[in-house]
Image 1 (tube, rainbow, N blue to C red):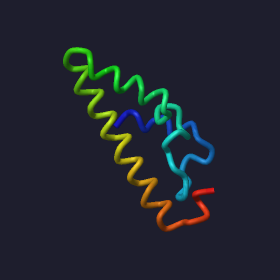
Image 2: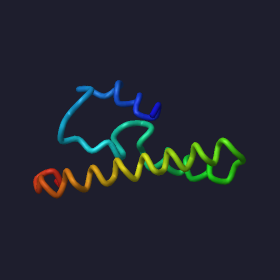
Image 3: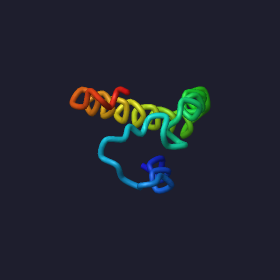
Image 4: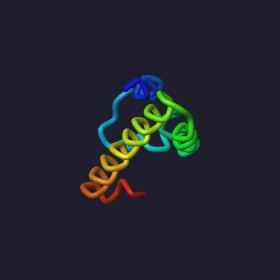
Length: 75
């Protein structure tokens, strides 16, 4: 999805043990509030909001799996 283009602005671009939630600009809690607001608009904006929120959910699950294997990552 295009929302992952914000990963290109990170330094380094890829880091295996980095959680993208609240690290990349389009993955912050503030951006997620805007994605929830999209749900109250007409099509296609509400569908885009659903897709973005599902994307954030999968990234959050990825963070949980990463943290379950790396106890020091919680710090």
